[in-house]
Length: 179
Ligand SMILES: N[C@@H](CCC(=O)N[C@@H](CS)C(=O)NCC(=O)O)C(=O)O
Figure 1 (spheres, protein in one colour):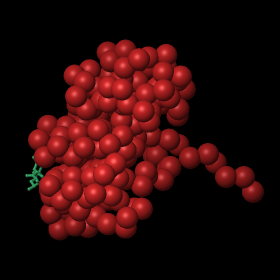
Figure 2 (cartoon, rainbow, N blue to C red):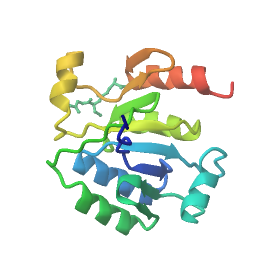
Figure 3 (cartoon, rainbow, N blue to C red):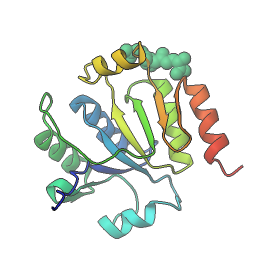
Figure 4 (spheres, rainbow, N blue to C red):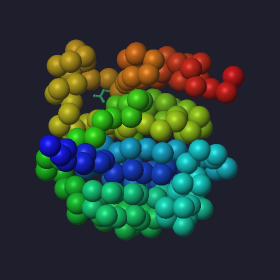
């Protein structure tokens, strides 16, 4: 019996502080689209080489959408591709498992930005669960956790789930920081 390959979420090679990357993340929020984030801060040592190899770019953003055979580095083209491929309200069936780190957040929330900035500087890959004000995932989240408050982090490796940006940042630094 053969197993169908998992349909992968788009991967964004991202730098939290780069305005062109922000534009892409804002688009993902508007589309209620989850992304795999590979942080590429300036002089990053973890994913920047990979981005260069895959897309020939020195700086993010770079979008790799394997499910549609697309690798894009121009922010306008990335946004156009996402809008066309993942229109709002359409069901997406990504069946790959999430990263060990999952951040439920949205772009315009300053507490979420604080956590993303920490993930970025620590160069930790994560699944970004888009939970913007109009997100269809909010109902299921509220049913499970009793409230809608973001950011929220699930760390499968550490076996914990956390609300509160300060607690999340503390956990990330203590667990994954260089010390
Ligand atoms: N003390 C919390 C505050 C988080 C918070 O106020 N988040 C806002 C967004 S900025 C929120 O979840 N609002 C409810 C909503 O978006 O429905 C923290 O530091 O994480």
